[in-house]
Length: 334
Ligand SMILES: [Zn+2]
Ligand SMILES: [Zn+2]
View 1 (spheres, rainbow, N blue to C red):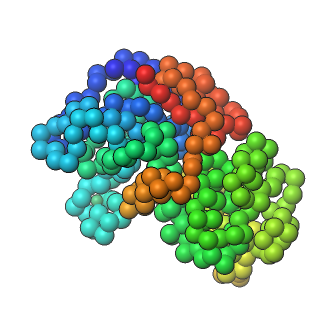
View 2: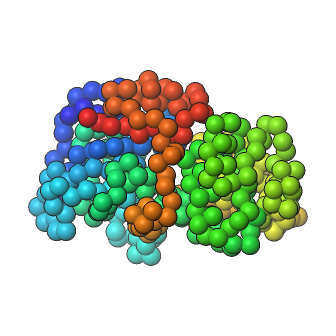
């Protein structure tokens, strides 16, 4: 089959690899569509993943074969998949906190992902999507990440919130905050196209390179944000989130920070600011799928390009790494 293989730092190539087969308890899915995630871009650019990896964990497709011992999945089922492969035996798995599993595998990181014609995973990871279209279903994973962050934040409808970053995660974060009843949501994003999308979805968006975040929040929220969701992951934006949050407030970090971050903890201490880093999702995956099936929010306007697998290096990773007038690029393997 054809698959996009990470060959080295900043090098991804489509080549022929053996198609996966369904082992005991597994199913193979023909991938219909797979989204390129910000974390894939970090992995591509930073060298934090092993060469030879097939990335891609945001996808939907059709079951094409099932291995021995699989119940509840059959050929032709339309599915997406939870990205975490839990060991099922550790104390975290016992609590349902599979994203903290002591021996965790992850689709598209430790296990071959969905930038390929077929993907094999434990059948337990697949979730039926019913009539939901494949492209919307491919947003289940990023939506589950922001639902996990919302839960971890303890945010309340009365909070005035700043979301830092207007990529897929920042925009979906603002969406799920509004769904939770928050009416005061500001979003910091330097790119004008992304700000326009944020505004159309209901956020008060501003350019943090032109206006200081604290000043904008004063105007848009009526004061400093009580919760800041950092959805970029670079030291400057994490520091800005920490400086901008109100006294007694909380910074929730979703951005993938691949570099160490220098911080003024004296300010955090005097002002009792707290920090919560979050990773992936647990049961929020099923909540995200239910929200998409019910039409509570539509992620499709965030899909700014759709490309064939053969174009993943240039039009996919190459272009996304340099520009910000794309949000989500969807890859079609056929
Ligand atoms: Zn993702
Ligand atoms: Zn475990």
